[in-house]
Amino acid sequence: MNNFDIGIGLGKGQFGRVYIAKEKTSGFIVALKVLKISELRKSNAEKQLVREVEIQANLRHPNILRLYGHFHDERYVFLVLEYAAKGELYRHLKRCTRFTEKRTSRYIAQMAGALTYIHGKHVIHRDIKPENLLLDMNDQLKIADFGWSVHAPSQRRKTICGTKDYLSPEMVDNQPHDEKIDLWSLGVLCFELLTGNAPFEEPSNGRDTTYKRIAKVDFTIPDHVSVDAKDLIVSLLQRDPSKRLPIKEVLSHPWILKHQRKSI
Ligand SMILES: Nc1ncnc(NCCc2cnc(NC(=O)Nc3cccc(C(F)(F)F)c3)s2)c1Br
Image (cartoon, rainbow, N blue to C red; front, side, top):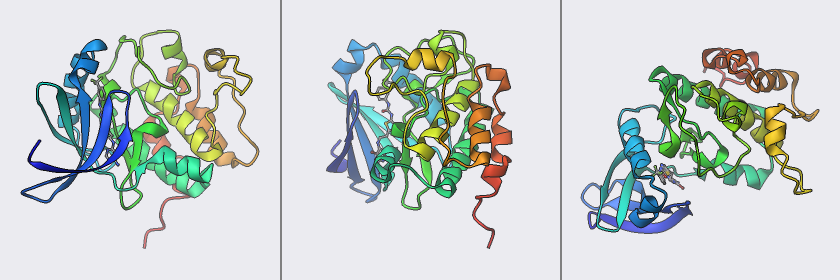
């Protein structure tokens, strides 16, 4: 702990806070996530943390936030993380309501690259949502928080869950699931970045219809969304996991190809 100069708080999570920090000898800037051991014990999440550290130790990809290491004292566990200078994607989304098709297409392409990589290692993230996506200095997207990732296939229930908006039908029905749940979440993410709302979020009338709407795959894509983008969203939001567009085909989808940065 005293190897670091601790800076401002970057965010508050369910289990602890995140600070920017500078490693004293190297001057290297990192993000330090501080987790209260008593909190982890209460939700018996220690095993999950061990799994996250193990999974993250083997992942190296430009669109996956690095977990450089961890240490603990008697009260806290500290995760030493890559610092993403532009912070959480969802703050940018809230600020401008919705992203352009070009910007969204680039983020979805970066996501597809990262998911191809982790699925190749039979790792499923299981918690793809704007809150877990960060942006670095060059607007490169970084998938963070593998606190819920597992090795495929898995029967493990995701109990403490934040938003229901990203749950897939097989998760809602507590069916066995595999990496194709990340494809569903990618479809939900694409919808939310383009429209500013999640496809199944409950309307303000408060009646909690989210689960029913997910199970029925009941969503409507607004007219301002282009035909190509609609096609990609519909091909990912398929109830039957085997019918979802395979991740490699996302990378070669017309909507992705047409917004690639023109090769100089
Ligand atoms: N600008 C920024 N630059 C870099 N990072 C930032 N925020 C931290 C992003 C994270 C990356 N990895 C994480 N991992 C966990 O939180 N894990 C976690 C947490 C609780 C319980 C558990 C478990 F015990 F249940 F597994 C596991 S949070 C920000 Br803002």
